[in-house]
Length: 418
Image (cartoon, rainbow, N blue to C red; front, side, top):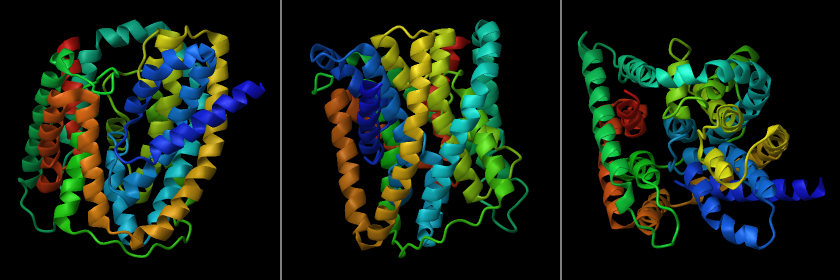
């Protein structure tokens, strides 16, 4: 028991570090841990303990990665949609409110996900193969919902045809990013890591589409930061509970569906729901955390890895019911630690962010992402990163949601399943 607690603590700390590192996607960090696993196992680590460490780090990262997304503007794909509402609150001096709402969303989603384990595992255990048989059509349907729900910015007095223009732009971004994704995955064998790690096209794709492109747009806009104040939050209990429930349920379901990111799941799940920045932040954070937990259940029930952490665990050890129970308990304990750590780290970030040269920080992170793409995926990966950055700029300058750039993952899967 003590040994398990130690590995939970180590995983929590590693996840906190990776979550606070701008632009580092959770799947990339899981791949790094997997690449290091042979050496760790040679040192005497048991595979199940390493699995506990990976789960703890993945849960911790889903809590703390909101901090660079809000204060720095360097998100990963899962927090990309949090940038606009989170940044808006930060520019109003309410950055800590965004962090608090995100932490509450993740914590509430843990409870929803735990309650959803039995019914979802029962349903998916009986009908998962049928779901996979129709996955191509399901992904097409989700893509259509994303694009058709695009209405662009709310501008008073715009023409009746304006909404169709933004839908067309959303389709353009989906197809452009999708074609880039098809190219990246079809040439994955040409990627080379200068660090002797297993290269993945996810790193240059996601870092460019969602991280670097936002930083470039931010540098061009000469963003300034207001002093931050922590006044709690103004959401009503009913709105908070509704947003937690939406996030938890959407994250629990999307854990079974390949290619649909938490950002996409949040957009689809909130169609017709209130669009306030506060409610969206709660739901998105909940989707991320619930997805991390239910991905473990999907691995046990269906034998399919639907997250980077689940894939790493699948390569390490066979997941039986006893190990699954241990991993879920480890995730729940980590969630408690991560909630406290997110508020503490968010408070520290809020206290110093207005004293930092934002332009210099954004430029340094942009250079860091570029170097990471080069070191992890070689020259071809770096070129994919550059192209992805340009494609990612379509969203902010066209006034559409960046979720459409998830075509980079969805279109290759649609082609695969149809």
